[in-house]
Length: 539
Image (cartoon, rainbow, N blue to C red; front, side):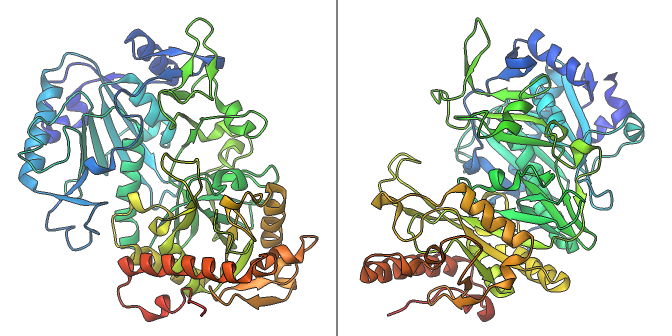
């Protein structure tokens, strides 16, 4: 829809000379614009293929938050949230506004929502100069009905000017010509020097991570599903490689969402109207939901394809390992939204922390106290194994607070306190599930815990049968480990029983405990109940 800037109060932004503004175009119109602009081509089953330019992933070192009076006391300042003086923001903002006022190309506008719960959703407005970027946010955020656009007022605006670079970045004390800057008081973010669409998606996530916890709502980097009756909700936390997407995508349990959720006094709700899935080495047999979602309306990024046939080689990482596809949430048939319902649910019955322990120390499953849940939530542990990244030669512990450190805007403890509060108020148990190795390190050549075994464990948690067994206290981590669990080998449940050399086991376990303790020091604000819930050395 072609609209005038005055109809949308662009004057408030300083944009007063923009010529063509296309608001909330249909998917077909966005695809047509993308092709006609030379931004992309049509690929498999009508999906659109684009390249994102120099950046094929987020640029975290170029993300800043303006240091201003309304937010400075709340922000968790540091490497994740770098301070930027307001005068520098003003200079960059004026540069972007001047670009919009003088550039003759079309402006694409998306107005929509972040958050399916209408009581806590955010009205988002995104301006872009690339049709495919408008297509991306149309896929990823919640698309409004026509009547909802009447009188629409944004709560937060992103102005994307990916063609604008900051040539004065050294003078400004910034890291490069690229910038992603948030002004919380003005509720505006500006993007320059990068075309990567994920900056807009995760930018709004960072904003929700700021706004919602201040209202007592826990914002979470997690997936969530329910049973076939829409009850017994479960949330799954986990870093890349732990199986979060795979285990939450269950043919018997409709998906609420695969990445970003909130937990309010009314229950949980998905922030997004779409999914943004990795496609590297995509196998239609292993991940049929993602594969089948790649069709007309989906947007593939940075994949290698045959220019004559349009066939994509998902195994080719020559452009990037971070090849991705975005598509509307209802493209997943077994999702709540795919069944015509809003992506919300009651309070969760279960919390599951997924980890891939390459040291072979953590048990396949353990039950946590609320304080232990806080500790492991703040820790956000998994382990990288040899071959997953360049230079990784042996198991390497990785910690990301709240399982989403790059997107937090408040101190991790704020989110952990909300987690404990909601766990206690709604009597929600938490479990840690190890999808990695038990009884030996990954380096030893031992096999990883099989997916069927892990799925069996998840099902015993969700149906409550895990509570019918007896538990033993783990001497290192203090959590409760089941002695038996259905038909699973009982020796597998307690790692020390299957380590051949008990001295090596003890040394490896203590080494992992030390890594946890060293990491936690960075986030310890003096709450001894959380610190004491962490692992202890066994001498």
